[in-house]
Image (cartoon, rainbow, N blue to C red):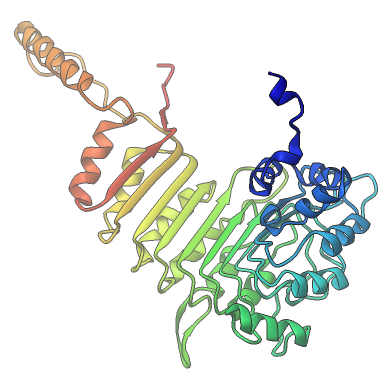
Length: 391
């Protein structure tokens, strides 16, 4: 035991120390860099700054962002998550255009940006964001009207050269996946601006209450005079309204009736499931369909799937299935009491068969019906249940 009393962290290799430091938060990393010169050098290792999550650090200001960018963030940064000041008592905006330009030049490999409760109305356009971005997620943010409009020339010429080195187009926005979650200021005008994003392939709209069916229909990928117009590169679309009181339901999923050429994956949730299923038959290229956070009946699903012969995957996530409606038996129908024993024996056989069915399957009859309509389709049930009537 006396041999280990003199051991300390100085005897550990740097790779092991970096692995230990990787379990610390950003705030704890900054504090660890003040211990000694060796730790200060280790904390600045870019392997510790690939994924930076500042959403749990509620006291982040523009001064702290500049400190992190100048001393720690660098070419190793891949994903950045920030929390804004919309729900803070101070309010205001802490993302400046100068800081975003410096972020673009110092972190050329940044591919994912997540903004929570951020006020972006002080930014002129989304082109001020790093052009190396491939995933942009906005949750509870405020947007200006012309935020998604793409001008012919980049906002910063230095960004164009860095984006070319990173593999993006010289002047276009390179975002491939855009997630909008509870963004009340997102309207049909913003959606129309996205038609100029050539690389956009995944669009997720959750609780975007101001998007209407007409706005979605005007952006649909369809044949035009100069080829395919609208969101021509879109392969995945998600529309979901989980129910916020005080907003009028727009039923934006009715815009799927425009056809949407090339759309292969569709996800519908909440109050948009019913209108979306009515128009899903117009999607000729649809291969995958996901329904989540809703209440459905077997008849409603079967009727919609009759027109989706090319469907390869059908997923139900957190869905409540309504029980089958059986017609009531009339008195005196079907003869006398001689058939009662036969009915009891048949009911006993049915109970034995039901016990052997998969317990994770909420409605076995639905699986059998879909197996006949879509024999090559994969069915997935996750966290589903059956509604039990009080009768």
